[in-house]
Length: 190
Ligand code: URA
Image: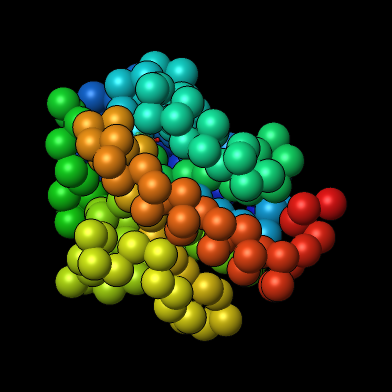
């Protein structure tokens, strides 16, 4: 099994797909490496590409605010990353071939972290990590167990910025996530 330093070095130098040609930074992930909870988005946007950190744009600010309300922060108790680690041009959805090339890095991150709970941010991550025909409007907030890890999905923060009427559903999902954390890994809340 890889260690963090070796994995990060490999990922930062990755040339496995064409996104390597247009990226400014590889966006590896952020947060405590012993977190019990992981959040996974689809891929870096412009701000993330420029800064090398996941979810640092307007969507990221909204996400941090909402997660803060249920006691979660990337400084303290969750790790956050993406399905693809390099920005797709013009923020298009990552292609399946790009996801296939990149997903191994996420599996290695999960092997090292061994999270109890994985929260997919939006449809693309849910389709990749939960099931290919995942319907975010119907299935957000539901739980799915795979190999001893509990998965759920919430709306992507960009979707909440576009349509704030979705926020109450996301708050309800986050309260359920908080309850599940208290049940499965209360130590995450210190
Ligand atoms: N959207 C994502 O899915 N991930 C990011 O890191 C930023 C925006």
